[in-house]
Image (cartoon, rainbow, N blue to C red; front, side, top):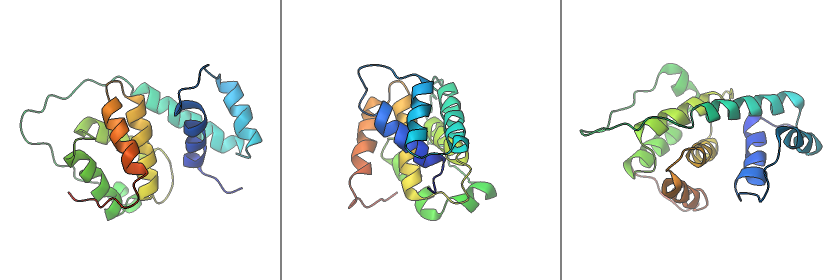
Length: 158
């Protein structure tokens, strides 16, 4: 089975986090279920490391930006891995208020932590959803993002 870290994360998210299960599952049980699903130990370890990085960023101070929003200039490493469609989508999410500058940076941090050579629009959507799910006070933005994820006819304008 050819899998990557995002496949493992999506499996975990859909199975353990998305529907807010009645009981909390421990890490060992999740690892066992991932092995049974066919994921490799290396990818499972990378996924849990990715989740640990996300958890460390759970409580971020709110930015109080009174003036115009800052403009994000992407560095070569980001440009090499994310095409224009991905960057446009992030800008679109900022323009409609789903992401603020702080959460955009969290998304970019977690995207680059995936360690894949190329990041697709689908990857961006899933990571945005996971970041918003993990951030307190982002329930409305999470719901908006969830709607956007499953609306395949959506046209993104920034």
